[in-house]
Picture 1 (cartoon, rainbow, N blue to C red):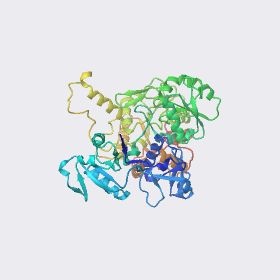
Picture 2 (picture 1 turned 60 degrees about the vertical axis):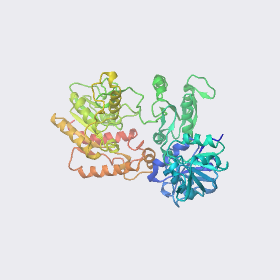
Picture 3 (picture 1 turned 120 degrees about the vertical axis):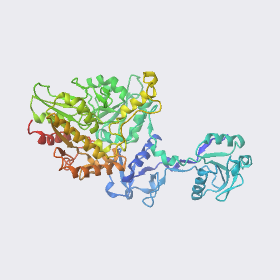
Picture 4 (picture 1 turned 45 degrees about the horizontal axis):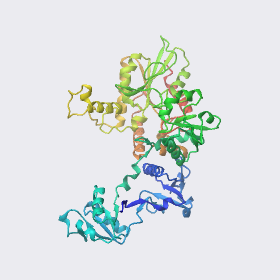
Length: 587
């Protein structure tokens, strides 16, 4: 008995022993990433990307090199594209018509929209459509663009060498069974043209619902590109992780024994004898082995990191907690939840509070945050800095935290360092105070309201997220900054706002930095939002003298950025120096 086959299949040429390049256009980074992920999921190695822009030669995205098309040996290479690139190059389609189909004799099951779509596509592919078949008896005897429509009774009379293409939106399996019952020897094909549009949206699955995040790998390369990579564990998940990193051109040396004593593994202690190594470990294993790693002097980002996603931070490794007003926070090491305390908390003394997100937070990195450098610059024992920055916080989080927590600390000075996440937010008409974790918690509570004694709430009205907003991202950010300024002034607290630098704003970026942007930002709209945000800020900068522009402090610096906004330690030192120059008077 024949089985249902796909009409479109992966191009057989892809399996040939030839170099393979994905066609790359700057405006289509999300398409390029999706295609790369598709091939990684298929366990197919890709040699790099191809472009017709000479200055993009040598840029690395997701640790894959971009090559200028004229420098690629055409006869030994395939240029692959998921869409029509015109005359830019001689590219091969990733999906082609199944070569087993009999192009000279095709019957199409389904005389509707999809059937008509197939008819037009067939003409372009040299496929001869002999008839339509439809279960709707009202269509029998009619014609669709000159091709006769038959009822299902014709199936028994079809020659065995005729191919039947099922062109319907749904019910492939049901129709396939109908054909199989009446004509089991006919070869059937599923006309799955919609999958050609969404295949780049599919993600790499590890186990269960866990998705491998390729865009974080673009950031990882700055840390592990020239190192020997070891993956902790011997499970199927660990093996797939190792293979993914190999396919992405990292130097994977092996698996670390997790107690199963399998052959061809290495102990974590033996790894220490290697030079320039890096250990990839799962979130679950890190939480279990954090003490062992610490005893072995393995430092986050220098020697070890999460395998998925590879973050620039400890998020998910430290003691994260739910926050009833802000969604999430962390257990501070000094006992003050949501704050990293720098100094000895001398009383009486000067208190400085810093608000921001992951670019400022003090317990995320293996190196010093800029508030730590600021404390060193101030160099006074009677000053304490409370770093209240938390990864993924926007100015809306900062405003609430200022009201709820900061005012009770009775600070002398408050510093807000932000702008990047507000710029990248997806508010739309959604209220900016509708934080994701709280929304999910409220939706869960609403779903099970009768079980947790909330059954007196309306069954037809979902949890409320606040008024829809009619303003844009910039005005939301500026409004929050102005409110924080007003609150601090009402309590005679000095307030400073710093518009933070990002790679988007750097006047001249290197090839390395261009690759960083393309690796971590996959939506062209992001660049437009960044440009608009910067322009709007420049228009109001003279009006609000307490808001300072730091967006250009790295314009003449290299090797600063980890990704589009996070920086290495020397970047943090430069930020602290710039902040100190502004706030030092009066401390």
